[in-house]
Image 1: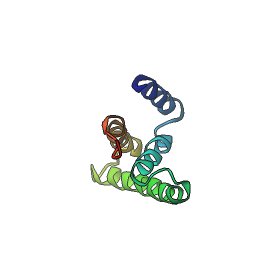
Image 2: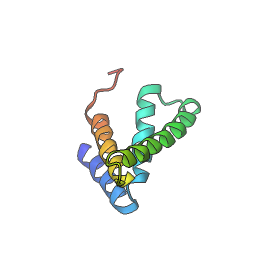
Image 3: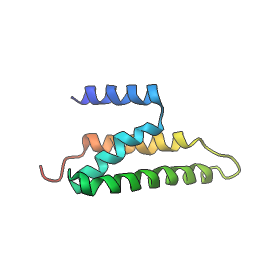
Image 4: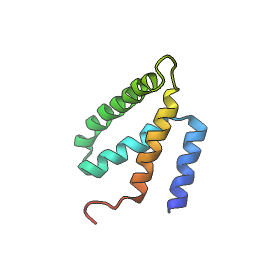
Length: 94
């Protein structure tokens, strides 16, 4: 299962690009914290997806002040760490 999820995620990122990786990370983080009630999680997911991209953009502009780091690089590093946490962390109710 772990290999299948990793390969599908890698193919999605390679094919479409880094920013659609938000659709893999943010909804899974939200559903892990708030449950699977779509009425509650959909607005929170939309808000936190935008906040995460904005935070990555600000961080990309600040990391090397006179220059800009591509936002996809910052997002890739933070998204990979979050994705690894999602894979290896145990669910709360287990």
